Length: 124
Image (cartoon, rainbow, N blue to C red; front, side):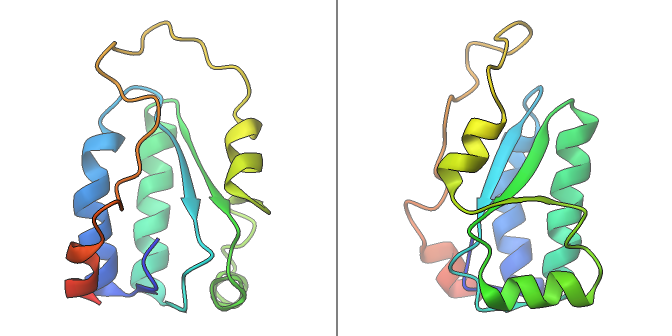
């Protein structure tokens, strides 16, 4: 996740993430340790991703939520909406065994959409 998850950061993040939300049963983990600023636009984007994933029989989980992000989630009473885990590994393991039935062979097993962080740095 980007350091700043405001309207600009959320929009850039969602643009990169949207193709993954189109797969059947998307199982997403947002690693949140780098978030230093989170506002309602960022929360709305996260809720949108959760709704999209659940609507396709998938899920979204948060990992390593930064203290700054945790405060905002609690203030906006959204902390209980997301499953939170201490690490990305724990969050991924929580998905358990996933049946490959119905998942297209073209679906990536794992994707890090932030290997190139330049679009996010422009947005923040």
